[in-house]
Image (cartoon, rainbow, N blue to C red; front, side, top):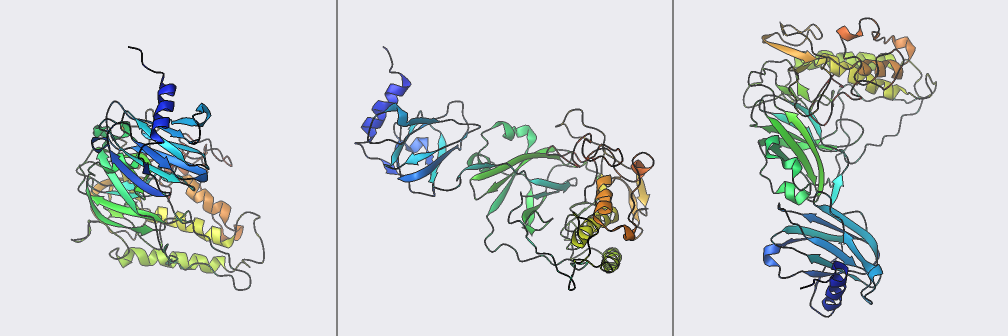
Length: 459
């Protein structure tokens, strides 16, 4: 028995669907369907629109998946109005005109669960290009951030009333209606990254660990992020992480490895004066019930000297006629203060690390690790003595170079040169090439990557 060509079968199906009962899809509404509750090949009528976007997402696993067709010419059976929505990792979309309405036909549904949405604006389902950001891990904890939202826009002060932010920063008002975010973590051995890369599929996975806290945090001027502190992870284990926005937009995956069972350093995060500090620091373990340090329990013996340094630097910087005189066509006193703060925080809070154990990125260079040490820290004598042995990953040389470039000469900021002794106190050659005055071309091009590798401490 001969079967009809797929295109001819579809035209007949559309013709029949026009005289049968159909479910109408409303604009900007998310619809979820299960193949177990659908009969035959379901057909949905599309709203009229000058430009309509239809997005679909597969929410279940399997080997055979539905095919989605759009007809945007319901007044005729011309093949010029028939389009198949291609699927990539379970996600697909179509954009076109439906001035007379249209039809969405789904073939070979089987037992598959899927979502459909129609909109006249941005995609409802989306693979977000920006990745989540890994702060750091301990043996059982991870600090993870969503991609940024709501970029911060500030207008610079004007002379003669030029002011700079105080040493202890106060964050601007949080977004009034931030989008909802959720975090999904799974052992990499579960092969979640090989499954359908859709928000509904990933969100159906049971997430590993226990979320200790989740709040908004402003790491830098790129915008607010959702911040998660997760505990109860397994030591020395590879994990895969995703962030889901509005239940339908997927960001990720990123990968990380928890430290070994004997890793001794706790996490430090959520410090207004060092907003980008979000990693393990060689400090005694905090008093219970806290499992990490933030602004509420970080000892004043550590924070007070740092705040004093920042205050003194700002006072010196403001002796320059900021806002009136220019010392650079590209830099301002505000960018100088920001760069100095990043450098001061990176050297004041050494970043604990272990020898590289990532299995995700082949032929990675060796991180800028210090030899094992204990007792007092030579980089910050205000840190308390510790009895355990630990290693740190050095600050990136580019953090120092950024402050050197951003600030006026009279402040006397100087960085060691890559040609001589820079590698003894900074990570050299990872972001920049390592030649004096050469930007870019480093061995990795970044301080860390999506695979959990950290080669030097960026801030």
